[in-house]
Length: 135
Image (cartoon, rainbow, N blue to C red):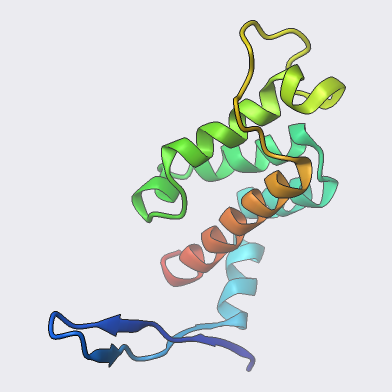
């Protein structure tokens, strides 16, 4: 069986490094989470499409799973708002925006489609890992 391994370095109050035990999420568990959850399958498909609208759909699927992305600290509200503003507003994403004519100036620091894709893929990856641990 294949596994993914990571470690976390923690500093104590005394400034000394304390290493936590490795975090292991077997690839088999990740595959099972994907196979068992239609919402994850859909999110992966939307990420492959790579359009503003499809990325937003993947984002919504994660959001609809109990808002775990905020609770688990995968992203903050400001980062999420930057993504949604970039996806929605025509001044940020042009003719590919989810909306053709939103009022207002649009986001002040919009994401590029490349950065938005990385953001959503990171969230989907964390979601899969979370669901592999807690089905």
